[in-house]
Image (cartoon, rainbow, N blue to C red; front, side):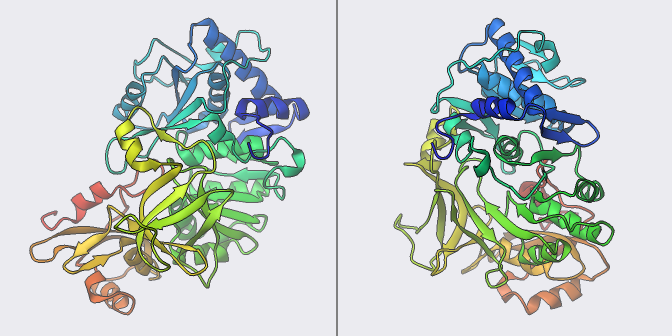
Length: 493
């Protein structure tokens, strides 16, 4: 295993606790701090109690916590893995039906939850980490194997019911190092994020708190002003966002009221940054390197990385950290340079899979490769450009329209705060583009169409422009296209 001599996530926690017992590992603003030593002891006690209560190796344990509960979530997460169980982290802010679906789908044996949370009655018993921490906190390490299942993350479910994606211990620990000289983000004392519990981005930050030099800093709920205040007060060196957060930060103009000069690295993940938004972030964070990370819950740790480059504003980069990338044409052969096809990423270790759904796994996961569900192409230097989600490409008459390209053009207008594009039915062309737009200053539909005529082909121009107060999003900030279609269909009022 690269960089950590076979140590898995619970082992890395034990190593950090031995070396830095009083150093902060995780800070939740206005809530508290978890040191490596306390994290290690508390998770050992949880693991011992889980074993005493009869948790069998390989059994799933639901972890239902609010974003104020990152500390308890971290303790429970490592505790479950040390007991030989499989952690299933979920945000308490999900709808009850979504929580019940996930907990039932993977047949959890028990549910650990935050104080004051009443999760669905699934499994044999429920309790808080505090209920389980009365046991001996001596080291526990039961049935931890690199190829064993460590956690199940449920995808965001923007197009249907969420699917459980299983990750092995080797997959989670890939790239982490027990060597202090090889830890990541050496320029920082804190790295900041506000990702939801139970998201792949959030779990990546939890893993980072063990493999990075700085302490992880997070907050109970994202707002642009609070996020900027944390950067200023903690002099944060590294910041991670999703594009929706980047857009909110720019729209709130927090850089005009707060000192953000401490930030040296700003990473965006979960979706590609529209070029206009990336350019705005570069101005708002003048001393930061802006980096776009492209991956998915299914593909991690495979990813492409792109240091935002004005000469390649729309690219999401090249493969990083041992992963690989290819574009597959319609006939299944590798696409030529510049030829559009399906984007595939290959994981360097421990490929993930859908939990239980072997049929779907065999479609998406092939020999270490993951079909990303995106359409894109490579330039002559191997840089990846995304055209669209495969399911979002609009077939309009004889043309195929990229919703990402139309959205990028909309974001170039100074009055557009947010935009999302879908295809709506048309009696002749099949489907045509329609856009929902959130504005930051007054603009008419006619003026916006005139602006777009210089940037888009005629068949790409939105047939309908709808001004809305906000876009429908899920808990990770991704636009839910099915709800957007309901707003934009021709017969909608």
